[in-house]
Length: 412
Image (cartoon, rainbow, N blue to C red; front, side, top):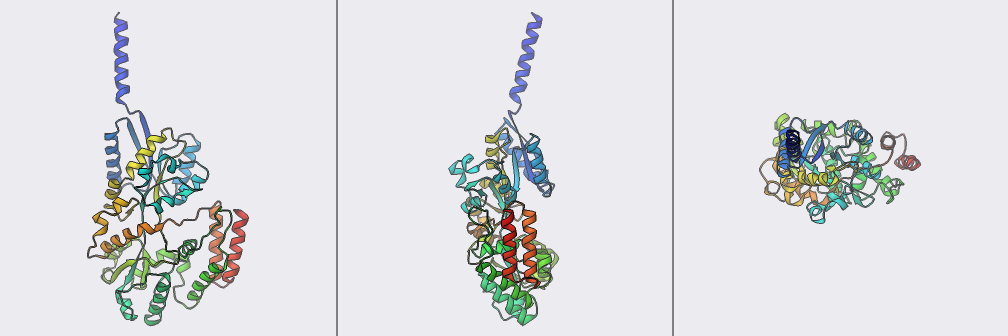
């Protein structure tokens, strides 16, 4: 009898322990958020677990250069995480192999409607979206008022189109000797420039490169001509954005398309330049679209708790939590309600305040223009070599793009 009672007591204790333990264990990966945002992410997790006592979340922060390899290895090893923070390129690569959950199917229509449709569409492959947008970083135009005035330009009328951007850059260089801009022509950034001008890079089936046509050649040839006339610096092709930010902070560049976070660096490192800095919307090309680097959350199909993982990803990216994150760092929300908050709509007196309002207003007309192709390292190397051959006179723009197109098509 005592043995029977002991067995019953043990069963009750075990049952109580089981009932008090979380039913679902989720593993959540982020990219390089520790240590600066440790308290924020842990606060999110605690809040979610408090509302969902049957769910326990294990948070792992991964460095950017390691996330792809680590994720593939974990999936192959049968120990997949459940919610993973990726950029657009990483998301679309996994989507092509159907390794992550179709979010158009997994997320209810009313929840999908929270997000900017153009940003949601950035994560589509084969017509289906495979990620939930988290945070984005749009560009604005920062420009030096003093250099505009020296060139005889009106600082209250900054360029709003790519054509005006080029004209003003030429005027500034010719009249002041200071470079007006460093265009985004280095490496594969020209692929985004093509798209901003309304020129697609791949055919609709994504099996052929289409950037060897006359419009593409004309665009590349125009920038080659600007380069030969010393309208932008020699190191543009080598140093790109880093070189441009350094030149702008040193008052050796009049205009810069940049994320609003750069203005904080100018304020700290170059107070004189900061005082002369004004901000405007980034100039738009004929395609009337702006590149919008996007971070998102995905759920691997190998997750053992897909439904719960999607629910947690929706919680992390909801209006309230995105807005709270955006207030801590210079990033922007992917949801329309968060972007309409007064924090993003009330202009202040500082350049970064104005940049915040301007950037938020761009969210509805921007999307991530990342080109995702198989063998990307090889294809991007080929494209970069072709662009450099055109700028350095080893090929004509037409020859360079025709060669790169043939090489891409042989590998696609």
